[in-house]
Length: 337
Picture 1 (tube, rainbow, N blue to C red):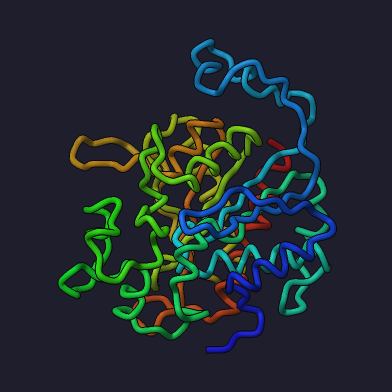
Picture 2: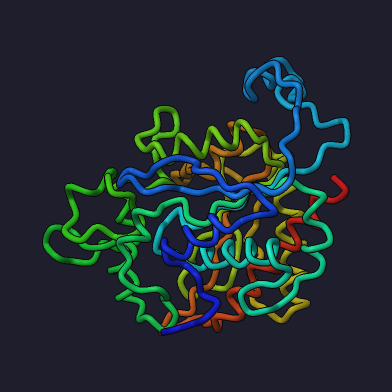
């Protein structure tokens, strides 16, 4: 399905990041398969007078030993697309955001005046595709109108016996490469699902580089952009966060819900005040890890994917509009913090 503004191919990412003039493009790292992972930054990096890492500063009872943000520093926002390389919605959204910041309109020719007016007040860190290996393995450019079972094949692949490797069983073997027949786009070329790496001794260079970026840049709010099949847009609950951080994330969750309602777009407010009831096995995932290296809010946004499947089904325009609502509210939420 051809959608003119749906820019998600690795060649398209290469072209736009190399055309950036108002921001700065860098190679964050190379993927397991040797592909470049690009980051685009807007706004100058500021000094936070670091004397300790985040957790040591917490041990001293004062996070300012890690990052002193009491002198009117610009808030830092980090957006990450394509952690699962086949989840194209976030890749497309970040590409359109870069186009907006560079030209004044997204790839549809649409302005987003609040973002354009307020982006200079922030340091913005934009990663279009964190997992180019998985994106390269996806043979199509859009999952719009793709049947659900076909999307599972593309995302999680198959086991050795040819059966679909669905969610969440795709996490039961990690790295999954040797257990799979068709390696899905969830994974890098080594079969690592970056969301569930070993964060205390990362298996993937991609994971290590992203955590180093978060540690060095100290983002106030990080949002990973994922695809959530034909569900309403939502934030996933994140475990192992301090309660005060969960409170801030719940407030943003409610703020975003109100903004989506105003635009007539579907959003489910899943409770971000996570209580350990002792009956589950909560995952410490990449989103949790990002908080613990930098102390900032860290959230996972699950976008509707527009599949040919039951449930909520958004159009390509509605999917992109949903992300721009998210981006605008991220700016609003950090303006007066």
